[in-house]
Length: 167
Image (tube, rainbow, N blue to C red; front, side):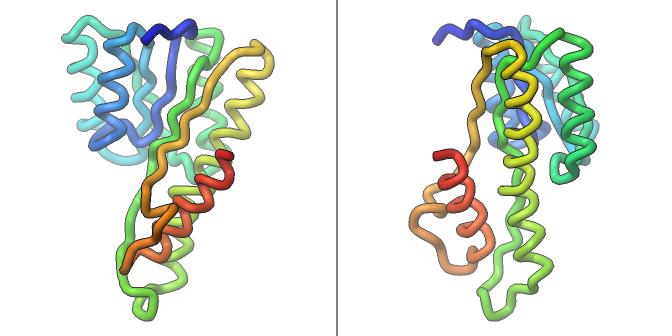
């Protein structure tokens, strides 16, 4: 795979799928911006691992459910690198419970983390990428967004919404 851009922001990259995405993209020569909300030590560990393997990485802390923080993170990247080439909207949470036992707060928290944050990121990134007339956005979803899953009404709705928004 060949990338013509220079950097990528991966949200929720301090652990799990996001960390693996960050490692993989660094192996392709991109400078990876590791986003995290909490867990600074885990983000630093991913950065050190990428750099030990010869890659380039930086860390940007932001709660991507908050528009001002997501916008500030993108500004930090542009100020440092002159552009944002790629965005991977990976950040997300689960709060699994049967619908009858699920609180509205748990439902809304998952929608906000998994869907609203991706919208915020797309909106901010498209502005930055549009100025350069280059860039790509990848939204990480789940088969649950197509099929649903018992105990995951909120997660299924968030990923189904993400699929529709992406299309």
